[in-house]
Length: 59
Image 1 (cartoon, helix red, strand yellow):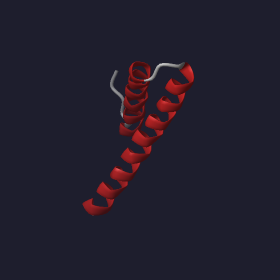
Image 2 (cartoon, one colour):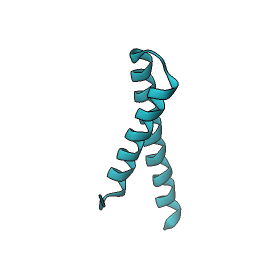
Image 3 (tube, one colour):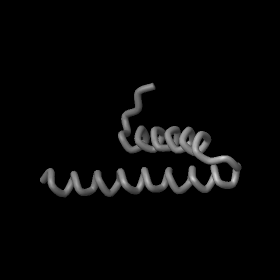
Image 4 (cartoon, one colour):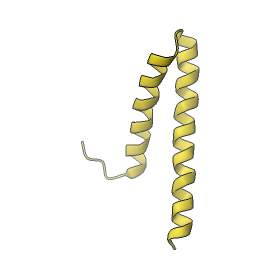
């Protein structure tokens, strides 16, 4: 699967990594869900901020 959007690729990657880490690191479903959501949001927001800084310094 080749995606043209780097943002969509990054979101799919973050989704899969967050899912796997939540399943192997937490015991109950509630803990897994909270960990999944927080890790997913941290990864996506962090990547967007990092990309924004790269854009600022590229010009």
